[in-house]
Image (cartoon, rainbow, N blue to C red; front, side):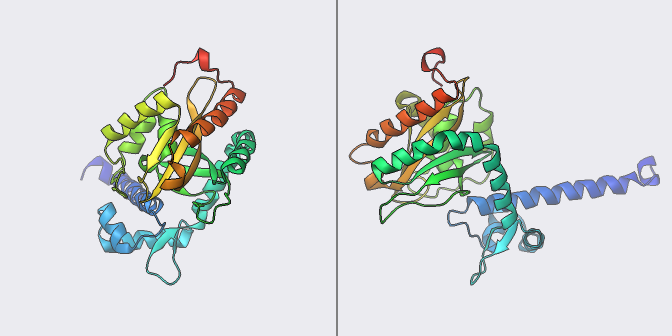
Length: 277
């Protein structure tokens, strides 16, 4: 018998490895729930997208439900993100309170001028999170709500933020996550296509999303940049494509760019002292 097994630490190591594996699998399940466009995923879908057996996925989901990190959708067999995750999004809001305070009047001004819902969005790993919002007045509008999470690779806001970073660390986080599912006709699931789109963001100063998260839904977003030029978040306006992108993306793009620049300047950013990108 070897020394590790004799002193009992071999079993401890095995238990720790098993615990880490279970944690990683549980987090992967939460990623699947967060990435589901309608926020709902069946056991079969979760098993398929995580590569877990249905029995293993069910066991982990039961624990997540028990702890409040996942929940069962009433009247369906699907699973949703639980209240404990919403608690974490509230924590994010507390950490970004200063940014929200600076941006709020600009969201109100954008919505008053356009009638569209406007949002303050930040990047969190491979997802974007809505941390503030002013609801629009159109009968047909996009109102996913504060705390909503969407895959970054489908998001104009993520493009706006990722176009202005000092390195590729955040981009790597988005594109090392698997799987990336093509959710609509123009979803940029390929890293090369997404990176090419970032060039247009730097050129125009705002990002365009056209039927990338859902068919017929588009979005314009402009980056909020800090003193060093790095983007900290984005102001976005999503909605039906015919309203958001017509007659041209510049209609909203220039407006959002102006408001985002005012916020950026309040944070210490100076356009002439920092090269774009």
